[in-house]
Length: 468
Image 1 (cartoon, rainbow, N blue to C red):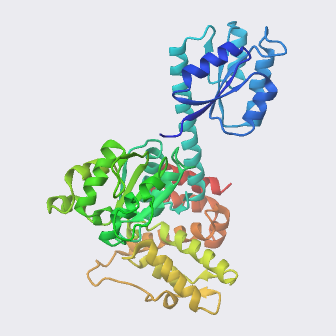
Image 2 (cartoon, helix red, strand yellow):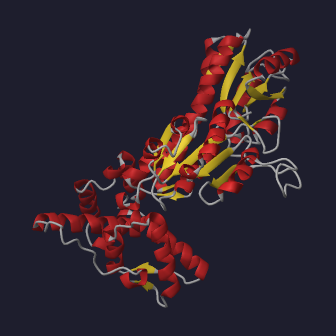
Image 3 (cartoon, rainbow, N blue to C red):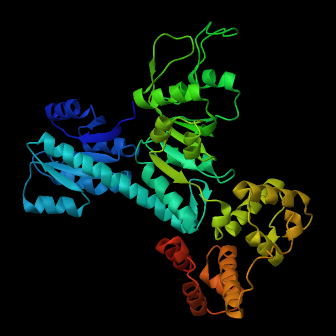
């Protein structure tokens, strides 16, 4: 079963606390506190998204003052915890004071359990939405999301989708060319989900011989086949209560597609040689670099399994469609490799910047990372040139239309502004000095060329925030 949401009930009347725990335990993982000291100790663990707080607490349970004082102190214990006040003190002054101190809702005594359930559901939802918003804000400011980097519109869409789908438990099917970061996206879905503290089990369906894949996925009992000397737990059992990532799921043989379909439909698996099914609760995230719809038409992939997996499709864009991210990623990899090799600061020459941003990157982010590693292993100085990456000074297509002078000037202007922002980590003042223009002029150039708007309004906010 999935881990229940944690709920702290702060209630000094033992009979009321016991009744609430009995009624709510089916849906929530309940902890109880009867006084402010016990409540403070539990709150300081940071484990509780939502708290119900009875205002009438000892040593003065007949007044709301102790409860209100505890309500005021909740942010110092656990800043993100949401508090539902439960009170028999129904005066307007008490309720206004509770809301003023941060309560998100009030449930009067005597408690209507149906109303309390509605309030709890709504409050947990508010907590999840605020958590999502904090994550998105942090990503907007840093260009980073769960170890994934990107400020482009394409990657903003990916980050937004991951943030949304992580709140559900539906299967996710990740599409993308080799090297686009499908496994990183799967890790992000897991890390942002309620299963984050449980296992993420990864298996590449195309890397394991077909005759071994079934036992690898589902395990086996002793004597199931020659050489099966004991029971072996498979990947699905290892992922119980967590997430299983099936990379290159399009390579799964048809007979195992049937077993995977059965698991999705029934939540059970059978080890090889076993006579009884085993109930497993694992979220499915799958990935493919082939056209599964075409595979369905060709009879290589079951249509019923495809529709079961394709509940939430997530497209990982090729690096060619992430022009704004190329230098961001390149400089990140350069810093990583420089630190590993103890080389100090290494920078890109202007020609290298042009070569990197002009390359089409058929191997996507993996190709970029490998070219960075090649360059860092070969250079003896501190400046990287196109030849260090195995790239020509310029890459041009004979079929390209010659741009007009105005178009060429705008393209060059846009590119150099982008490069200055990346090199200065989006600091407007530093970028303006680098370009030898004023801050207002640089702001005008950013607006003129839509830099940041390409990534949505959040991208514009990113540049202006970085400017101080």
